[in-house]
Image (cartoon, rainbow, N blue to C red):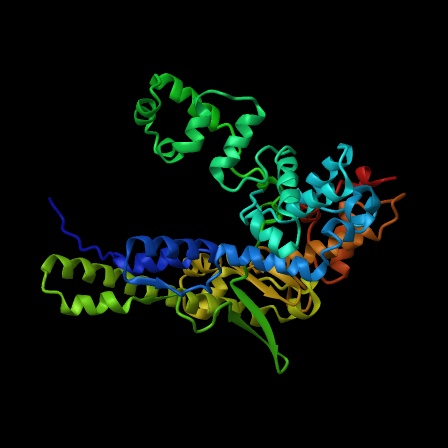
Amino acid sequence: MMELSQVQTQQLNHQQLMGLKVLQMGTMELEQYLRELTQENPLVDLEPEAPAPEKEDELLRYLQWLEDNDHQNFYCNQLSEEELDPLSRVGTDGGLEETLFRFLSRQLYSMDLEEETAETVRYLASCLDERGYLTVSLDELAQSGRIPLSRLERALDILRGLEPAGVGAENLSQCLELQLKRIHEEGPALDIVRHHLEALARRHYAAIASRLSLPIEEVKAAAALIRELDPRPGAVFDRAEQTPYILPDLFVEEKGGRYAARLRRPGRPPFQINGYYRSLLAQSQDPQVADYLRDKLHQAEGVLRAVTQRESTLLRCAQAIVDAQTGFLRQGPQALRPMTMAETAERLELHESTVSRAVRDKYIQCPQGTYPLSYFFSRSATAKKDGSQVGGTAARLMLKQLIDQEDPRSPLSDQKLSGLMTQAGCPISRRTVAKYRGEMNIPDMPGRKQ
């Protein structure tokens, strides 16, 4: 016998799916998504950035250099011995970071150069960009630095002979050419980097072979050689690439004794709808054009709503954290109280998965530093005698303080540590002590004995 049953299901529409997708994006990921959106949707206009032409940037850098150094003294003469000698700071704060300028400057010491020539080479080295390229002409440098052009030309030849190969080039083609010459390459690779780089990038080997009257196998071999070269020889010294950067999504501010969370860009829309295409949609008589623009407009408006909802949800979750963690904001991690996503979701009348998505890969900057929002949530907590609770992070800090204060000749056992923590108002078992100790990479009692 067949039975009919009615099942109620809830399906998410496109806008809800878009909202969930955007909600869990971190700030950098969201900005990348919006940049990609502008490439496929003509109605999306990101906020225009302040114009900064590359040449103007370079000239401003050299003008600043000239302000700091008169024309009779070059940059490297102004550097202290500590700047040029990495050994001078051993044992202090870790020494100076390696830079392209210092790496090039040290190579000049073993060369038999007149001091004036060496100074000019250092001047050019200070003008290189992060790739190792010299993008300002020697004529401009001669005029702005009041240096004879002939001296700059000789210094540039010396600079291009230093390591890493390719530094001092004007562009990618010349950078690759310098590296090929360094290994005495005289085959078709030189012609390719000089005249056929665009075709090489598109892997048009047959076209290159036809232009150079070569077998296609030789072109492919040359391409393999070129791909082994470094298009950005100075990038290995680029500090920005070596240091990861966290962009806070939110900030904590204190106002009248109360802490409040705010967004990084409060009240600013992430992009604008292009007015020209919006008016074109209203005026277009072509059904295909109108349908295309209408779809793009709906997409842009949907993303805008999703981003607005993301900011609202993110701010609510952050404020809930700030309200619950006032002790942490004033005293530090030892005052971090236990907090679960389920409790936060119930308080905000949200689903727990929404809170989870909202805090994922998001960071907040507060008086104690910059922390991921997920740092403030813990599923484990211990009860105090007065009915309050101590979070797992605070319990770990308490445990570590007890171990740091113990007599190294007679370290405390896990059972003893458990008893001391209970006396301090944080009752945890011996097993939990062992668990926390292991998570902090702290040895057991025999391993700590000295």
